[in-house]
Length: 568
Figure 1 (cartoon, rainbow, N blue to C red):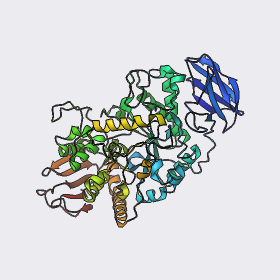
Figure 2: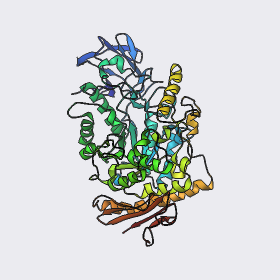
Figure 3: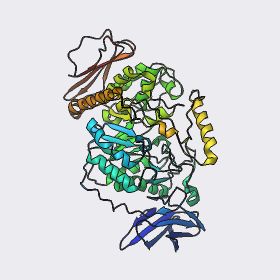
Figure 4: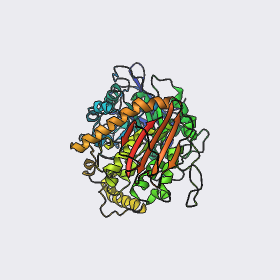
């Protein structure tokens, strides 16, 4: 039986408290101002069972120094202070929820802090009925784990199991999820298990053995060979799923989880999650730069497909700096490959003579590729945080919007895309005052390393920066036209593409190039073939005349930007 870190309600009014602290010679529980001795339980673990109730403050006192609980569900204040006992079973979920199958997923990625002017779970919940009416079936929330400061993207969390209080309490998060599910929307949480943030991470004090090896780009590497750390992270992941009735997780940058163990932590986590029967399907999504199919073959549902985004970005903007350089030689050829096979890089030798990462993945269902034209990463990795739409304009933007929503892959929009927003989404964080200069300097060097001019960079440490990111302030006719377009596309996807997808994939896609910038793509299924003719910068002038389309925007045979969709 592994050590169950944290504070958990027991029986008869007793609570169980446990901490892994192999470096400590003595451990005490400070509960509501009273000290209680903790007993060693082997392998550096300490435990105590004490009468308690919901809402009491507590810390772990290790060799005379008080620390917050690394597995806390709730803090009394910031990440440095006492934790609070919190009973996750007290929330009333009301009606049961049986989830939705993955093939119905149309995902909207959102950042709770900038999705509404208030930046809270409660305010976000009020937006859910209109998203459901539009046709959004899933929300992917950027990380909410408690991080230092009042605002940030969330990828520097240190109390991974506790929602950041700026967004609301644990029960307010549950109420948001309940509201989403009552509107037929699944909720997926972006969870970071590859590192802890730099400010307020006290694991070095509890268990210095927790870290070792080559550091990740964002912090010290976690030693995944240690059973107690694996148990902590497994419990955090399953705790989010079970205590918040989540429909799934998106695991951030799993390529940075370096684990020589057998089984690898990611396979062990998958087995742990899949072993429990729940009343709803649990959807597991990966961000993985390696472009390998093995985790999806084992049971993960899907993976972010940056190959599609990056090739499209180069094709439509001409930018080739930083990681876009990989697609500089033939971005339109890479788009054709992504349409045909799902991914671009599958281990082949690239046009520039380099060896591509990855391995073939076309045998996977198309739903295993989460395709996006914009994500928080790709906007945020720019000095001014511009969206793709701001760089290419409405005509090209509308055609690429229709393409992403009508291809057979799992589509994901970034908040505001559904209304054609041009609000920026630059990186922002709220470090301690002594680290502000280092943040600005580090961000400048990082972006310069990607080839950007940072002379007009939006200040990542300014409290005004998050306010720039709210994407729904425009009420002009243009916004209404984008909403109408999104509604039509999602209705078509639901009524026509979903039955096709469910009839079963019948092989890879087939793509014919028409000139440099136009494609005729066909995807065969049991019930028919999805057929798309699209021009992305020049017309498909030599394409054959086509019958009446299921959906069209312009004429791809004559217009530089146009799309025509049929099902044969």
